[in-house]
Structure formats: C-alpha cells, structure tokens
Image (tube, rainbow over all chains, first blue to last red; front, side, top):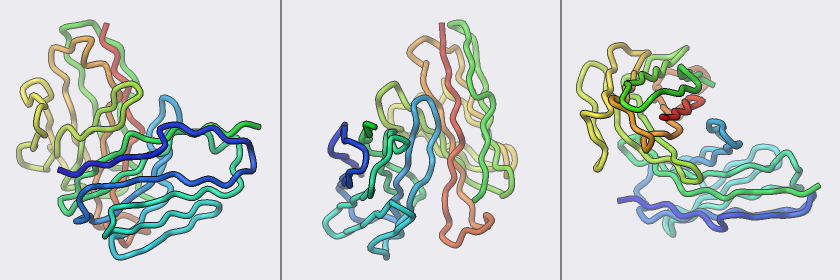
Length: 111
Length: 120
C-alpha cells in the first residue's frame, strides 16, 4: 500500500526566506503527484500537479519537482510571505484514481 | 478549473441521528467520486470510491453500513453517516474525476470544499 511521508511536520521561517518542503512515497507506480494548500478549517487548494512523466512544474513563486524512481518530490517556495502560512499537503494518485495524502507540513511565515 | 461543491459546509447533530452530505460536480460529469475524511491535525484518508450506477467500494476499516454512499447521477454523490456518534466528528471531503472538465488535459481530479461534521 502506498505510504506518503512529509518532512518536516512543521516549519517556522522569517518572511523572505526561500524554503523547501519534502515528500516521499513508497510505490513509484503513480499517475501523478499533487501539492495542495490547506488553511485551518478549510478545504484543499491545488497548487501544482506533476504528471508521472514530468520532472517539475512551476507556478509563480512555487516550484515542485518529482523524482519518481526515488519516490521523492520537493516543493520550493521562493521569497516566502506571511500569506503563505498554511498546511501543505503532498498527495500521490495511483493508476486507479485514488489519492494517498501525506500528513502535511505546517508552515508559519513570520512577518 | 472545474468546480465541486459540497452541502452543507458544516453540520452539528445529536448522537444517534443520521446526516447526509452532498457532493456535486457543477460543470462536468463525474462517473467516479471519492470520499475522504480528515480528523483534527491528521491528513486525509480515503473512505470509499463512489461509482455512478453501482455500489460504492469501501476502503479497509470503513463500515459500509454506517457510511452509506449513493451515486445516483453523473453529478451527485451523497454520503450518509447513519447513527452518528461523537467519534464520527470529522471533516469530510469529496473529490470528482473528470475526463472532460474545462481547461484540463490531464484527467485532473477536483476536490470539494469539505463538510465539517460535529456530533454532540
């Protein structure tokens, strides 16, 4: 069964720092990998989706990479802002359309 | 992107009552929908796969008689929590798979905003 792990569980940084969130998964037979943002008590906001054949995706200050063979993905956030404070979830989708979520990284960006 | 809605967004009920949660795909048809739940400070866990016109498929450890799923149309799936108890209090999120959603080329799956259930 697919297991998704995210490190670190929590991260606190001053505004303006560049940071990296890590995600690892145990089964490399994935359809795609997606990074989400979740604000307290809210649903999911999709940030980046990487297909299994892709190596990375970029959107604004966000860049996500995927190394399927090693079972790893990273989310890079450049020039962090207080508004980036949220929990970031990594999820892998298998070939049966099921998502497996990591436990998340809770990010706090201090002004 | 495509939109998935959930209703209600939050509900409070007494122990022993049943609660129905709706998941709708607003601008696309979804033959398959998925139901997840998220306990406080935990990640999302898949509960079941809802298939239009057939029985839902439940993940291991999820009681199918307690969590009734109906997917009667291509745009609506419902989750009914029967005889709810305080331990059922959770955040329930659905997602829907679209092959023909607007502006998508990758068979993207879209998530609803979630329903917070509190059982007293």
